[in-house]
Length: 320
Image 1 (tube, rainbow, N blue to C red):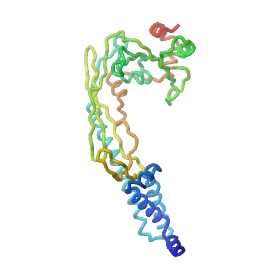
Image 2: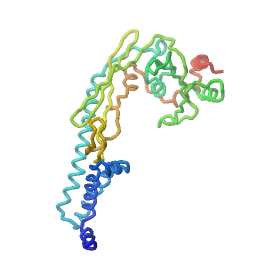
Image 3: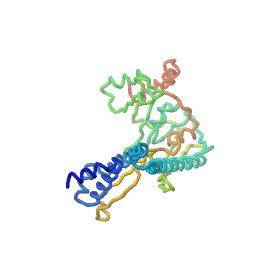
Image 4: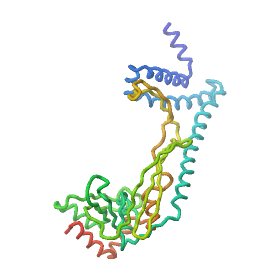
C-alpha cells in the first residue's frame, strides 16, 4: 500500500508537490498547537519560497511537456499580475510625491549663516551634506535642557578630541559612509552649545497617516520660522510593495480579540521617503542651502579659508 502511494506521489510534478506542501503547512498553522510551533519555525515565511518556486517549476514543466502547456499561463499571471500590482503601488508613491513637491514649491525662508542659527532636529545631517558649518538641536525634544551644537571639524581638531581624555562628551562620526566623502578623520562634533545668533527654527507639527488605493503613507507637516519670514512644508514616507512577490501566509494569536487568527498578504518593501523629499532636503531647499561634500570643505579648510571658524569652534567646545 505504501509503495503504491509513493509511486503515485512520484507521478505528481514537483511544482504541485510544493503547492500541496504550502496548503498542508497553512492548514496546520490554522490549528493553535501545531500553529504555534510552526510560527516559531518561521512557517508564515515558507510560502514566499514554496509558492514562487512552485510557479517557476510549473513554467519549466510546461515547457518540457511534463504538464500541459496550458499551465504556462499560471506563472505569467502570477509574476506578471503581481508586477503590475507592484508598479501601481510605486506609481501611487510618485503621484503623492508630485503633490508634496507642488505644496513645497517656491517656499523660501530668509537665512543668512552669518546672522542666523539653524535649530533643527536634522541638524547633524544638514551640516554633513550642505554648506553650513554649524547647526543646533533643541534638547528639550529629547528630554534634556539647552541645545546640542553640531560642528564640521577639520582632521586636526578631530584628532585632538580623540587624544584628549578630558573631552569625553562629544559624539564624533566619521564621513566614511557617504559615497562622495570617503575622507578619513573628518568628523561632526556634537557639543552642548547654545545658538548665538537670531534663530531660524524648524519644527514638526504632527503627522497624518492615509490609506491609498495601493499603499499606506504618512505626511508630516513642518514649520520653518525665522526672524523675517516663515513657511509651511511637507515631507512624507510610504511603503510600496516589493518588486518580487513575497506572499506571507500564517496565523498568530490576536491578544485583543482573544483568538487564534490567520491571514494572507503580500509583504511590502522598506518604508521610503516620498520622492527625494527628506526633511533635510526640504528644509535645505527652503533656506537656499547649497549641497557640499566633506571633501570640498576639507580642501577649503586646508587652503586657510576658515581659520576664524576653527578658532571659534575650539573655543566653543573647550578644545586645546
